[in-house]
Amino acid sequence: MTIAGAEDGSGTVSVAVSLDDQAAQALGDDTGAVVEDLTAAGWEITEPSSADGPWIMSGSKGYSNSDELSAVLEEVGGVDGVFSDTFSTVESGFAKITYAAGTTVTVTGDPAQFSDAALTQLLGGLALGRTPEEAVFEGLSEPGAATLVVEINLPGSSEPSSETFDLTGGETQSTTVAAESTINDSNVWKLLVIGIAGVGVGAVILVWGVRRRGLKA
Image (tube, rainbow, N blue to C red):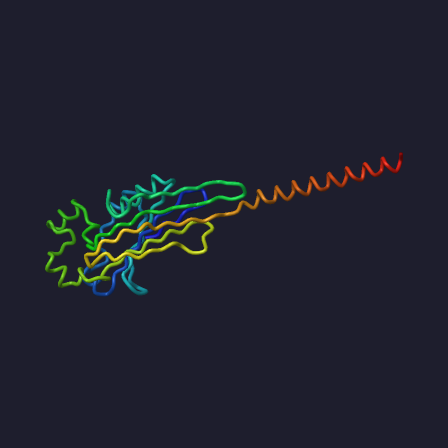
């Protein structure tokens, strides 16, 4: 998942799901992915593809401010779920603009954390559509079987801040992923240079005028 901020304080949350060959075969036909509820909620979904490697499906949704960013992440990780204490700020100072964004990511080590009551009911009362025994047999409880990568990329940053979380293995992880960047406002510096140059020219003219009056006297 990537949070990409824009210079006006808005941004885009992009989520990509990548499956290895074994997981893709268990999923079956690509057309089995149901995305109508996502598109209805404002997500732009890219059609699943496996032509150039792993099976990948991705989607993105924009946000305008910090509150909207929190709401979008709640759609990804659930209310009071994976993401909390989310923030996005833009602060203007003298000749610079500072951007900051972050969120606390808490995973339980059980991918069922990403399910919900409606999905569990749809899957016959099983959060992942698997009994605990089937999940163990298919390796869903093995550490590293599923991971979550969270990136934050802000204007002016040379590279995104990134953390990787293990969604399996039963170990709880909680880490704040945050980034900060600064863009210098070149227009302010140009005006400052022009202003200083203007003062310098004015001083030269003043001195020249005084010297001319001195010569005449």
